[in-house]
Length: 255
Image (cartoon, rainbow, N blue to C red):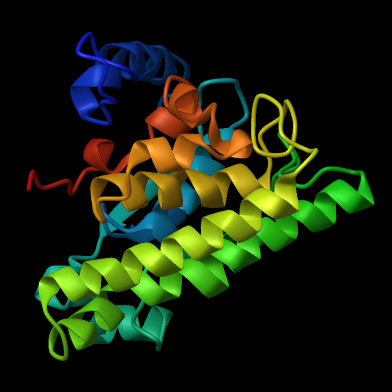
């Protein structure tokens, strides 16, 4: 959202009133609904954020996401390496989703699992070419961009180079990924990344763009020069995106 001073605001207060109104509506509709799904997450994880958006989209009623129990895993305290969590994901990464006896680790398979189980609001279009584009965009983010800036990698790099050198390294790889995705999405963009419906690419791009700007100092002007991302700020005014932002998660800590 753009403030009166012309800058962009990604803070909770910018969207809080609208989201709180939706939350009140949701609580009036859902009462004593069993929370079979358990999401093991960390508020700042962009991978977890993708899953939160999917959970919001896959709800039975518009503006009401799938009921789930949020299980916070504090990465800074090393809770991802606890005996309990390693049983869920031996890699020690969030997110992990538990659905009864089924355990799924990593955001990509979690989202595809939700796609198969909950048909409402499909995340992959019927058109095979557009479906392939969405899968490719999501894969670029999950395989070629996010892993190069995750906590373990950044900690290792910090031991080798200065903070400024680390930042330049991260910005280079993020920018390279965005350039590739922009070429991939050429001719597809509309209200969202691949048209006028929210699909898989949007779930992966939203957290990635947010992290690039708020955590790694990538200039928003650089982001907005890509035609496919020009509606990005508007996305945050929509419930299923805005309710999933890190600042609205139960374990959020102001930094």
